[in-house]
Length: 165
Image (cartoon, rainbow, N blue to C red; front, side, top):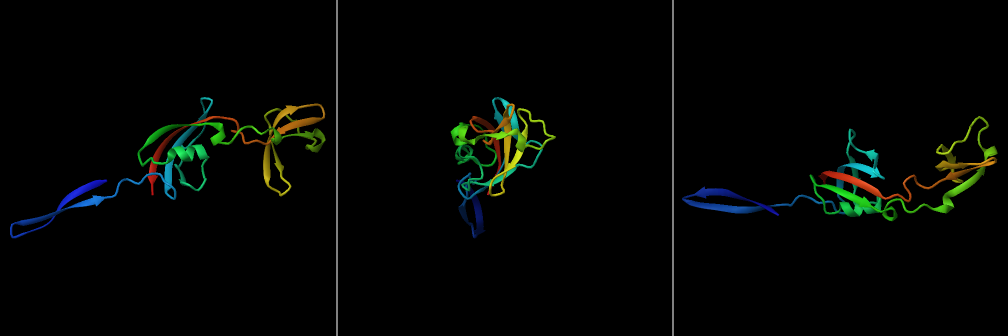
């Protein structure tokens, strides 16, 4: 904790001074609004960054970030920079084999030529959009992967805390 010593007043040769305690810089903790710059790398390649954009703002403890990143940001303060490694199990989890689906090519629009890597926008039974990546094209079917694109990947972040409130 920082302190400032100040003279309150001087009267008849007597000086009254006091030390005023100043609060320490706020740290990243549950309930705090955090503003940060970041660069995310996967397998050494940049896949996302706030460089050239507005910094990311989130509330610590509200599960707005992946668990492994949020946990390692705790205790940092404005101006701190940190390199953070997050294992896949604390990021988007492992690849789930149950999220691969084989669908008939006849269910695709007739003018669509499916290719490996192509993303198709499907809808869940509840109407929620579900992007699926084509991982295999067969004679009569295609195989779609509905896992998060970063599932099974270890993530590497370089972060700089801009502000903590």
